[in-house]
Length: 454
Ligand code: HEM
Image (cartoon, rainbow, N blue to C red; front, top):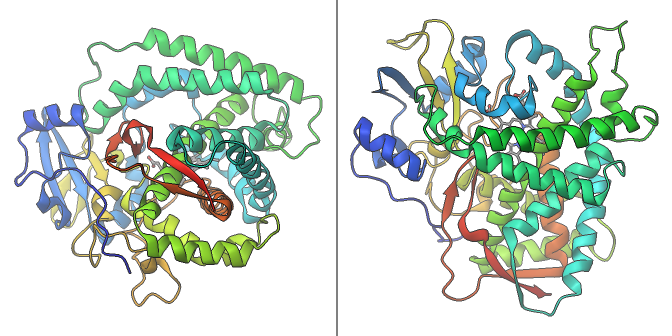
């Protein structure tokens, strides 16, 4: 068990006032939470005349995300404005009947049987990265965050489109995503605190241009793919729904395009951040690193990894689980109350913002022993205390739980294990690692580390 406490943002000693909160939010979304937030079960504040509630106990999380989830819609108007040009009415931002229909169509695409097939892509793509790293001089410093970003973008691209999207077009999509994100990032942060539906300095023109480039490429691939829909890509699974008027599950070409883009967007940054944080955490704890090496050497031995290894990589999985606890890629989930509600004695007026924060829940003093320590052992099957399923929620919970929770867990575990079979990653002396929280929580400055063959 390690005594390592990885860095976390400064916690103010008392709650910030509304103006200071707004200023701090623009600097860093995670540094606004005072020490007391990590021991409160439910709290509230009023900013710009709007109530903001923070649900931080298993009971209140279950209320908002599970039992009364229909009273809390997913995204604010501002969030829709930010993401609609790219995602249309795709799964991530839709609510109500559209969301229900699309989610019902997409759930089976991510069953464990299906994920087993995508695991082949995960393994093959990671093996390619092993070959690339093996070709560079030992000890070369690489930026690990973009390395993991390229790896996971490649995996999701191949899972979605197979070979239909060539390398050049894939690179254009990735680049346009980055441009889109940079253009909307400011807006995205504001949504968490329900700022009015305007923001100075928004560059939506740039966002629209980037969205158009992505649409053109994906529309083109769909048009070509529609004639050869017999392979095993997510796109071909969607295309089997095209114009299927006989079933309630038909989708138009534009809806399919939107859903494919949602999957690309949701499916690579989260996994890349998780892997980058995991490399950093492991590099700081020799005993964790050693135990992981023993496991990957004995489970993977000298053969290629398979989907079946996921179950066997118990300790590697625990490292991923603990990484997701300490650095949840989506640290805050926000909802808007669409009708009046009541939680305990508190009335929740329609229009209030409800925040469920994995960031607070995962480091909550009432629910964890040594909440800020890195201790993968707490996730081992024989751990004396099991994490509460409404407190540990890196993938959210309830009907809007991550569509690809299992895919994401298999992908991060296999990628880490395969790379760790061949390499150690070490942090250069004097390198400080801090976080950056924009759309997702990631290490700032790209996390340069030395790649050392084992
Ligand atoms: C470690 C990896 C991942 C983490 C931690 C993660 C986390 C999450 C979280 C917290 C949400 C809920 C967001 C909210 O309610 O505001 C979510 C939703 C979603 N995720 Fe993931 N995710 C991961 C990987 C993936 C992957 C690989 C894909 C696609 C292949 C994906 C697709 C989606 C989709 C489509 C949704 C929206 C579901 C809906 O609204 O019905 N995620 N994810």
